[in-house]
Each structure stands twice: as C-alpha cells, then as structure tokens.
Length: 204
Image (cartoon, rainbow, N blue to C red; front, side, top):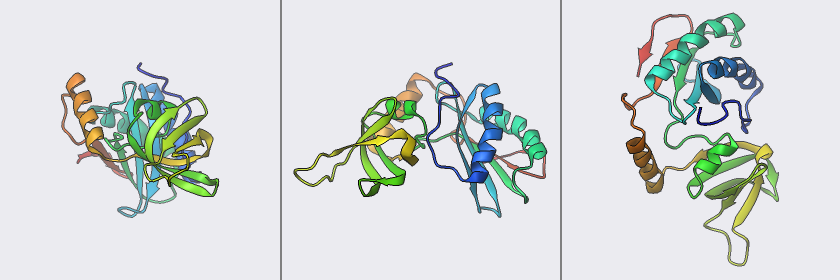
C-alpha cells in the first residue's frame, strides 16, 4: 500500500453521515481502499455519495464497482437511511476534498479552500496556497493578505470542517503528469451508481 488506509480523517460530517462512514470505512479498508468522504444529498430524492481511493490515491471504475458490490448488502442490513436512496460511489476527482494530513502534504503549493468548524481569530474561511503541514496544523498562505499582515495562517487540523483543492492550471498539469507516470487503462468517468432497491448497475 502507498499509505495508511485508516489515517485519521479531518472533516465535519452530520450525525447520519458519521454513522454511515463508520459502516463504510471497514468495508472499504478490507478491499484496500481508503474512505475519503460520505455525503447525503437531496439529489434524485436522496443520494448517498461515497468517495474513496486506493493506496496510491487512485480509483478506477473497477474499484467503484468492487466497493459498491460489497457495500450494498452491508448497507441493506444496517439500513442507516430511513427512505429509498440512490448510492453513488466515485473517485475524489482532480479538485478533490482534502481530508487527511497526507492530502495536504501531497498538494503542497497548490491552492485550496478551507472552512473551519469554528472561527479562528474571527475567521472561518480561508483560500490560498498550501504552504506547510505537520502532524497538527496546515498552513495556508493568503494571496490577498493586507500589507503589513502575516499572509500565513496555521490552521489546526482538528478544526477542519471542509477543505478542497481549487481547480487551477497548476493542478491540471500535476494531474496530467501523474496520469503519464501512472496511467489507468480505464474510462475518464469513475462513478458507479446504484438504486438502493435494485441490484442492477449503471455506469455514468
């Protein structure tokens, strides 16, 4: 494996999403995948989005299918959502969520949007370059910091509610180079969707 699949995630999830994550993560880990994010949305009535990646930070359609296949019966038994829902399993994508310390480390120098669960020095939202990361904090450099102020903000990882990469030319170039170094013989779209009450698959 390229990294620890069970490394702590720093992301604010609702009670329902946290409960689902506790169900999904062991199943994903058993298959060699790391859970990235769980999100329940009102799309298509109700959609359960599961985002995951393999030990090298990749996730193909075959991976989506494997995780969906193993998740469906477990979710049927646990029944965490009290209504019919649509299950969507996908890769993190290029402008991915940043949920673990290693994610920030991988994308040092790239632009990110970060939201804290609680305000830090009167501010909850930050957008800038990932400047540094250690075991407890990530440093974001704000490009629009007023003259005479420190543009670098050290944000405790434990305070993160949500963080995501910003799509930039530099990020696209990194993705292109990563693809050249580690090509995937697969289609571009890496999403598998299931209806909760059906066994058939639909590839989008």
